[in-house]
Image 1 (spheres, rainbow, N blue to C red):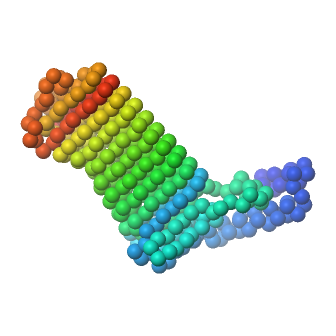
Image 2 (cartoon, rainbow, N blue to C red; image 1 turned 135 degrees about the vertical axis):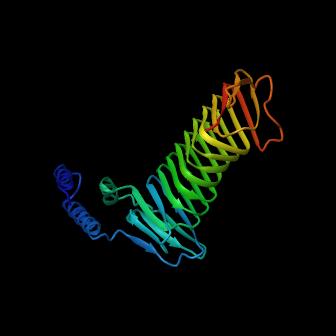
Image 3 (cartoon, rainbow, N blue to C red; image 1 turned 30 degrees about the vertical axis):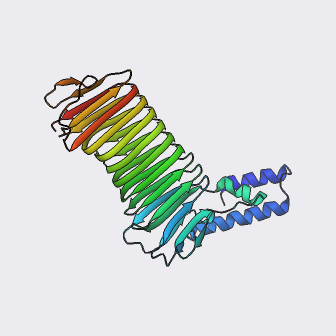
Length: 308
């Protein structure tokens, strides 16, 4: 037990906020916690996980989930004391423990880390939910659903269908391949070095996409900007904003482009540096494999085709 905790306990005892019995109980609990950490007994493993879905449901705890191609079990390597594990025929549930409203529990929360680390097989179907904790998921090759009310979400090095949503918080995906359904009510969305199709939208926030391959995708913002840089497109690329600008830079691209803005300008800059006003005309062949449509109510749009 560290000196800071000892001093805190003594201060509470001397001020009459805890009894001698409570002080002794807290000291014993903290000593046991220190001993557990030093012996690395915090690791909890779950065997017999074949053909089971992993569900994680937390409150304000942060969670990091890492896939491992050699893993054959679920291992909670940090924060196991904060959760309980329930295994049924079809799923494994890791959820926040119900907190007892007692002095011991409340005091121990002061020194308790709220970060949970879990290692799972890379092909395990997974869903993660938090109320206000941040979520990090990395190195999976499976279907995943991630949801938070007010936490940030990060998904890195993933292959497979993804469903991500939050109310208030930022979303980042990097090196992701698969069909995507990404939504946020209030937060920025960043996509980097990914190969995605599907839907990306936020009500209030910016969407930034860099060095990615986009196919059959709808990108929409009610209040915020859409920026796509150094990326490629295939089939349909639809970008919509109510109040915000759209900036698109596509590499080695050509295609059919159509734009509409109620109170702004939509411009295409071709590979030979020609400037085309899309508010008065469409560009290209409507049968082209790449179809680009930009819609803004209050905002400008600019598309650039680069030969790089």
